[in-house]
Length: 272
Length: 315
Image 1 (cartoon, one colour):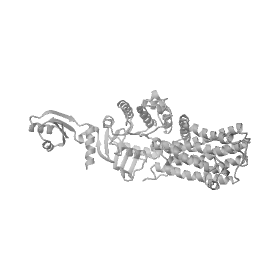
Image 2 (cartoon, rainbow over the protein chains, first blue to last red):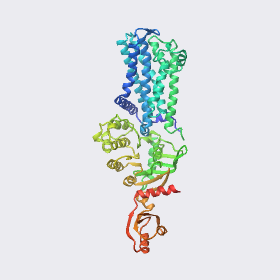
Image 3 (cartoon, one colour):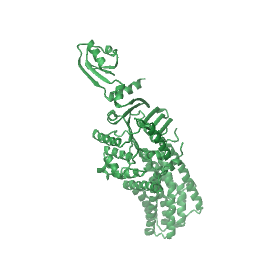
Image 4 (cartoon, chains in turn red, yellow):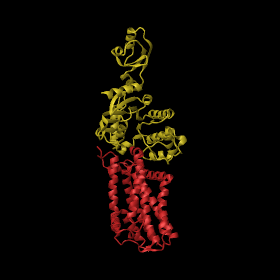
């Protein structure tokens, strides 16, 4: 029984490095083209967090009001930024994978000599790219309409943290994509995404949530990413950054294990 | 791995005489999904340069056999060998092409973009214009997949199977659901492949299709191979002739004659199936001088196939 990792490697055997890179490039290029032309993904992943930020960070609340050591407008970049990153990552990976897996397209690709890792990498690249775009848009709004003054270095740090923080949710999306059907994927993602966002304090700041939820939040990955982002805008809970990174890395590894289980199940390797 | 493959090929060449060497085989392969036995102890080979049709009704195990060949599923018992190796290895996969039944293909990519991506998976793909020409897609290369007709969609999937210039192609029900015209176009494309020296395994439940394309037909039903041969041999191996006549002889009398496989009454005529017609016609005329409306025809592949699968179902 070949393990998944040997299957991953065999894809690049006998191929020159440049040829392998070309496969990765084309896989990503056509993944982007497919999704951009569909519009549903690009429009909804970008417009929802932007809309929420404008509503709750700039319009409905006084944007200069103090909140957790900074202003509402600055605090909201971190929370709605995390919210946007989660959406772009989960929908970028899970819905495509679930549909292509459930409707037979992934099988056509698996029958070809495509290196399987290129397929997953393309979806992760899509999720991370759209995550970055969302964060950049929120920052632009914050600088132009929110009266937020963030040193350029801190702004760059914020983008880097949230872009990197997209990775755990991309992996989570791959795991979800392996265990939901093509038609129920969007519903399943929302069922995980929305409650997780709320309980992690992404919509309503944690301090306004019941005590019990504040405790539960410590076990939720979006909480940790939001805390890292809040730390940059001066509103963190003063826990160690390493603690948050470790939580996110641990969460990624669990999701990676689940995704790998799904991959092996599909490869017909765990069933005799 | 490559050296190994070449050696296997050389050995295969030595062994091959008039017949092509075996390049892909299922050896005593069974596949069960829980209580369902999709394949039972199947021995089956594809030889270099031939087109084999795996013919059977829906649910016979055709798609499962293709999946085993492609390494998309593992046999419960027995082994699969393609070019002397396991089809899960990328080295073997670069020499295979596959056309599978797929419910949905990304619809926003253009035909040439789909081909460009799949071509990049292979070490020595055909040029884009060659692939387009072979699959008859030149005119629609810039259309997005979602705008294509059923026949055009199947031809794109066919193009993806052949764009890597593989040595063997697995086509799972390539013309299912197509109208007669689209089916004939695709048949022409498949014949072009054979002319290029490729080996093809094609599954179908269209008997006409197996008859029109295949060098060899393997009939499969309920996970077992029940007959194998050229289309002509398959016809001959069952009731090869159909005799129709109006006679005063009773059904039981006719059924008792040597060589008669089956008799049925169709309005005022009797329909007799038999391996050889001559002896039976002679005896019929001898016993019933008033016999009229005599017709002798060769049983179609369809009848041969039905007879084969029914016989197996009854036992």
